[in-house]
Length: 297
Image 1 (cartoon, rainbow, N blue to C red):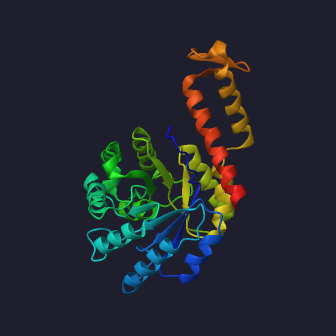
Image 2: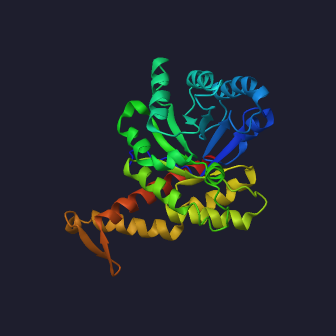
Image 3: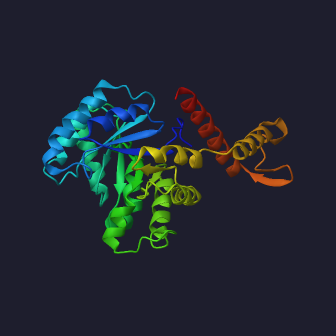
């Protein structure tokens, strides 16, 4: 388990070309905000958006929200300049789009190192291409080298549907294998993973259902396209009172001297192993961090 637990329940995209959106993000209870230079910005507005987003990051005012800049892909005419400007602005992370193989992350990390980007600026990877799914394990494995800065996967489910020609059904039947594969790859190498967006922001019932689906699969949170989705998303991805209470019982039970060296114990008639202790500690840590964030908001 990571030493520092950071909730990433709600991760809201905000268009970098929209001044009002950049300002509004300062008042929303999202755990993280992605200031976007890619899909939401027209080609003729990309340079101006880059300047605006980087200025917003430098000026601050976003409090405890995690700030992420999504650049354009390195192979585009804007990509390298985006990455260099983002490195100078020093957000919490830079989201690399259209990742297809491990070299995309390694190349971005080398550029960040070459300009002495602060160590606190991490790399997130958009997993939105068929190649990304096929190479999910290899991409995740670059996190083994700290110099590569890789910390989180973000699913681009709309792009995956487009590229695969799969049908976008409510149960996400077609893409569940890809989601599961990417989750396992992320966990194998200690990465967080954020689910893709839900397009109909007026359909709260459908949105909550998909949040529950993502949480059941093992996602840490969900990317969002509208401020109205933040509250329901936080609700779903916050550990319930029952989960926290059970976790604390497990932690307390293993803390008893008689159980200190046991691999398996009984808690309220249920067999509990040390793997459950690891899970319990994470749940309790997430719940504590969420309370601190919510109290701050």
